[in-house]
Amino acid sequence: MAKKDKHVSETPATQALRRAGVEFTEHVYDYVEHGGTAESARQLGVPENEVVKTLVMQNERAEPLIVLMHGDKQVSTKNLARAIGAKSVEPCKPEVAQRHSGYLVGGTSPFGTRKAMPVYVEASVLELPRILINGGRRGFLIGIAPLVLTSTLGALSVHCAL
Image (cartoon, rainbow, N blue to C red; front, top):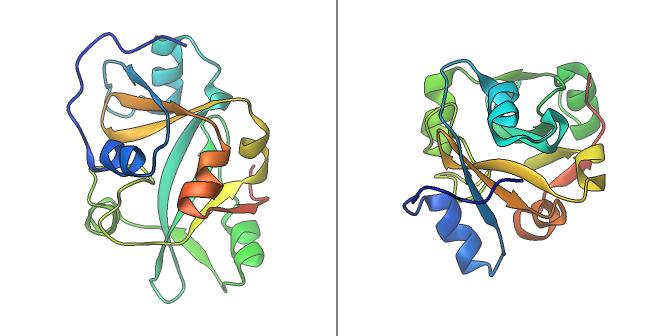
């Protein structure tokens, strides 16, 4: 994985990780609108499966939640709802996701969110040796051990990948 080659100022995510004593690496890439994890993985020279996307969703009562998924997979909202005991789950509209997380869509990190939300992680993400996840800004990923998701965020493991 490429090391940080540009200066990135602090974000709420990096501040939260530093407060928690979590070691992480910084990975900067040129953000491309609608490029997604395929673009960041290509620029950073890593498998897209190791780039984890942060998705802000909501249940049938419009209560927000975060889902962490492999970059090359989709979320089965039906399987996710079943796994978390909800009637239904759907993605939040971008402006709603931004209000809950405090981050611009495309720069959403599960760390340092404006509002505390339950976090769910695809179980197979936790089996990877290392992941890249958004660091709180478009064009900025952080490299962490996947177990940080459970130890720092309290993320619960679910099976909802398609």
